[in-house]
Structures are given as C-alpha cells and as structure tokens.
Image 1 (cartoon, rainbow over the protein chains, first blue to last red):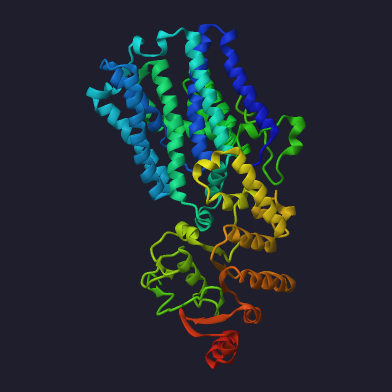
Image 2: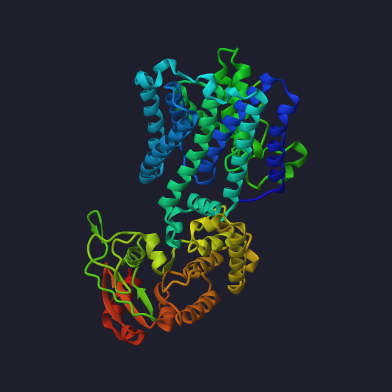
Length: 322
Length: 236
C-alpha cells in the first residue's frame, strides 16, 4: 500500500511510450507492440486478483480464451461482429460467475485448484469438441469481421487506447477505498469479517473484475490475431501469466506489464535455441530467489539505499545466466 | 459447543443486559474465548440459540452480526500487515457506505480525514501512517478497540483487552471502558480479577465450559464456589 512517486512516473512513461510507438515504427513492429499490449492486459488482470486481492488464480487463460473463442465461433458461422462481441461478454460472465463462485467457496488452496481445473477442462473441451472449436486446428476469423479491416496504425491505436484505459481504471481501483478493502482481505480475512465485510462477496466481485480485464484482452486478441488455438485456454498460458506477474513484481500493475513484455520478447528472441524454456525457467528462479518483489523492485546501483530493511539484497538476475 | 469429542461449552445460559458491563472470568481453558467466538460468529454453536436484541442470530454470519451492531476485539492482536492505522480505520468507517462510494476519491478523502481525527481523539495520531502490525503490543490493543468502536456498536465484545499491558495502562483502559459503558453494552473477558471487579456491573464465573456463579462483583466475591475455583486454579 506504499505509494511512491517513482511508480507514478513509471506508469505515465509506459503509457505515453506505448501510445507513441505507432508514430515511429514500421508496421511489423506495430503488430508486435499490439500483441505485447494484449499480453500486458492479461498480466494486469491477474495482478488485480493475485497482487492486490491475494487470490491465486491459475486459470486466467480461461477468462481470456472463452471470449476469444466465442467471437471465433460466432463469426466463423457468419454471425455479425456486434453479436459476436455480445456473445463473448455473455459467455465470459457465465464462466467467471461459475469459476468465481466455486473458487471463492472453496477458498485458499481451493482457489488455485478450481481455477486451474477450469482452465484445464476448457482446454480439453476445445480439443475434443471439434465441431464447435475446430479442435487442434483451431479457428480462423475472416478478415472482414475483425480489426484487420482497419489500417495497421488504426488497429494499433484501438488496442493501445483500450489498454491504457484499462490500466488507468485498474490504478483507480487499486487506490480507492475498494483497493483498501482488497488489501485488507488479502492481509487479514477474519478481521475483515469482524469489521462487517462480506469477504466472499468481495472475492467474487474482484474475480469478476479480473475476468473482465482478461476478457477484454481475449476479445482484442481474437480481433487482432484472428487465429485461435486451444492453447489460449490452457494451463500453459494460465501458468505463464502467473510467472509474468511474479517476474515483474505483483501489486504494482507496471511490474506485471514489464514481466509480460520481457517474458514474451525473450521467448521470441530465444526460440531459435532448443532449450529456451530452460533459460526462461532459470531467469524466473533467479528473480524469485534474489528479487522476490520482482524486477520492478530492483533499483539502479546508486539508489539502493532505499531498499526496505531486512529484505534480501536485490541483485540483477541476468548475471550468471549468460 | 463441541470440537470433535471435546465439549467446550455446555448448558450455558448467559444473559447480558443492555447498558451493563458484563465480565466473564474463569481459569484458563474454562471456555471464555470460545464463548466470545460463538457470540461474535467466529464459531457456530453445535446446539443452542443466540439472541441479540430479541433477534435470533444463531446462524447469522459474522459480518452481518458486525453490521447489526456487534463489535469485537481479539485476544491476540493480529491486525492488517501492509495497512496503516489510518487506512485500517478508514476501512472500518467505509463499511457502511455503499460499495460504489468506495471508488469515489472525494468520499475516500472524507473518510481518511475522519479516520485521522478519530485517531487523534484516541491519542494515536502519531501512529496514523505506521503499519498496524509494526505498533507496540499495547498500541495494537488500543487500536483494536478504536477499530471495534469505529461504527459505534451497541454491544462490544472485548477479549482480554488488558493482557500484556502495564499496570498504568490497565488503569487507564479500565477508566475508558467505564466511560464507554455509558453508550455501549460491554462483554469483557479478562484475567485481572481486581480490575474486573472494579469496572463490571455483573460477573459470570466460568469453569469447564459452564457458568458456575453469576452476580454482582460483591456477590461473586462472597461466593465460595468462585473462591474454590480460583484457589484451585491458583494452586494448580
């Protein structure tokens, strides 16, 4: 709950940079940048849940993939785009209510199990129900009913605009009285009950908010990337989001965005190596070991005095990995 | 009240009269804290009924009991790590405003100001921006009571509010509890028998999950059963 001016400036810088990109870069990079913003949105969605409310969702891909697939299913059957988006929102609401209800009801480790199971079973369903989802081949959105009708620059601006709006709203939420209630639920659930808070309801609400953000990311993904595969629902992506958040630094919003950008970029740069998952894994282990508060907590050498007393000395995780 | 094969509270009949300070005393393991947990809704009783202000609240969840006007402090002060005192109090205050107000900046600022002035009244203004868990034991206990009182509960349940406090702090707190009693009904669990005798209107003595003696402080003082229990406990 400590608010630093530095973080404020960092957030503004990230948003401004993200919005300025299209003015300087050729089209190819714009696609990449739009992609990163979509993954950043998914990271934000989990940070709201895991970082601010302390709810460990290991099924975030379910909230991302369900609306994406819904759009794919409606559009590939010739439905209009507006109907597709409405259907995507409805499907997301159903999934988020169901997962949120049971995850909150079981609580604690149960939250992990329920969210993970949701992601896994939807992944399996997408593989098996080939008539609806195209199975392993996935779905492909026709150009006419996607953002591809717009010019690349305009597409990018839609994604960047929505992305910064969500970031702004998430920050507002985190700093409001509601964010305070989340922090309190995270740090002492029982005491919140004694103060008169309906903890289960708050948990369900924040799960819905988080699912909503993930859903926006999923809808954007479907409309920009146009190719959908079962992996978008699966436990692999769900777990990767957790890594992004912890890598960058939970409960900071900016940290998880950085985490997502770094991880996704490294994955693309390194995938010429066969053993690249090992490198990413080691990077993650190094960060968790030496910078448990995430990369965002690392300070340039000259400013290390400000680190919290008693905390482990942060050190650059890149060293030792080559 | 049972935990598996253990019966912790049995055949217990407690009536707290509005406006009184009602103390519950008894040796360790008598079931005093369990009784408070059952009253506040931390634990559900395996049998029996709880009525508050004529309303049956036996199965009303804890948060709703708090909203009905049941405030409580805990024996072991474990507040909110990562949350400052002012924020904790703001949290208590915002409970009664609708959730959409929590998003309003102006409303939050208002509550934060009220929280600060309440801390000032309690003489804790200097801790406003400290984390609740970084306070000294005595201050945490004090903050507990400020938090429990924030929404002006009609019944205040205090679980060993004086445990771990110095003699002078105890006297001060005793006087404060007496003052509070003008507006709140108070149920108090404590070990400090002399202090309890001096501030309570009624005292229930618990032993092995039952209330064995109940009466005014002088009646309890005169009771041979109460003496036997305390002497027995002291010898053990």
